[in-house]
Length: 125
Image (cartoon, rainbow, N blue to C red; front, side, top):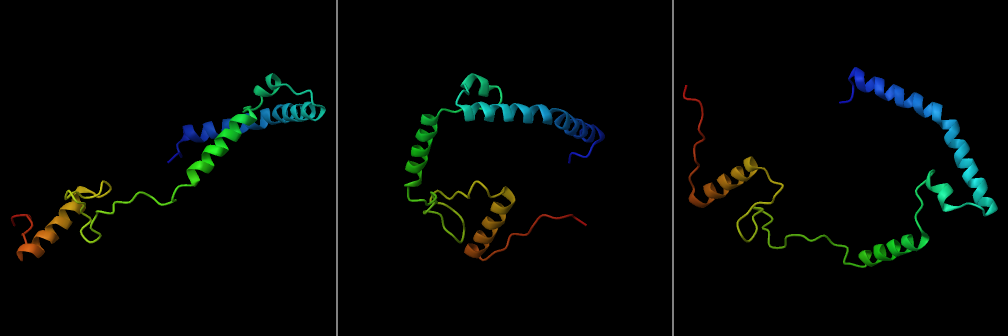
């Protein structure tokens, strides 16, 4: 969709900005790595370059992720839904089904039950 002249111009300008700022960014990263090798790197120096997350916070997140993985691993499915008609125990169709599809399914179900096919409304001529 983004094919307008304005978006093309903005993309071009962003690319030029990236080219212009790349050497500065590279220098800052190299400086941060050099400071880190010496052991003199401080969090305040690195925070303006990159997002700094404490190690204990990451470990807590890993533990939480492992606990979540220990579940069955199966999705919660509607076990009470009829696979053929797609109706649940309350006679409702799934949320993803459109009204048009639901109407079609109902017409099939009613026609099968009564034996009569309801005529569709059409153009008079």
